[in-house]
Amino acid sequence: MQKQTRVSSSLAVTLCLMLLAICALAVFAQSGRRVRKGQAMPVPLPEVTPAPTPVEKPKPQFTFIVGLDKYGDFSRVSLYVYSGVLQSCVDRLNESPLVKADVATRDMSRADAVKMARAEKESYVIWIQLRSETQDLAGNSNNIYINYSVLAPVTAKTATQGNTYPNAYRRGINLPSTTTGGDYYLNQAARGAAERILDHFHVPLHR
Image (tube, rainbow, N blue to C red; front, side, top):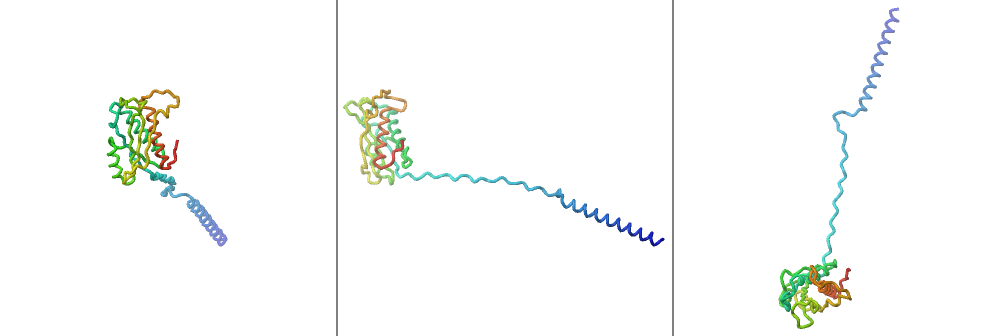
């Protein structure tokens, strides 16, 4: 009887130990699935988009320096008329991506234009002069036309030259002659001179 009691007690102890072992294994397995509190979740970094590479402008094939004689023949022509003619020519040249034109920093006589061209290595010098179709030097824009010469760098030889006339741009349109940008038709004649120069150098005209 005592043997049976001892055997039952030992079996009970063994079963208890087995149950405890099973419970311990279950608890350990559950703890392994949990994330440790000390570890931080990785934060995804935003993708860095590379800055676009700036597109370099192509080097112009032709460079010009445009000057004008403001005190040649006309002493009564307004300075803003001269400025309008000069800027209109430069703006028309710069409309081509193959060309870079700048305004001369000072007034330019013919001798100054020749001297500047000889000192240049690449840039052509465009010399503009306002002339009168009559002997009227009072500054009547109806009688004024544009004379231009293009001097080659180093040699100062004349590459091309010509005249453009404001009346060629009237075409029956009667607009006020003088505007805040100078004389409208003289400005159109200056643009026409620029177009002739571009055509001489076989530069496409972008309108």
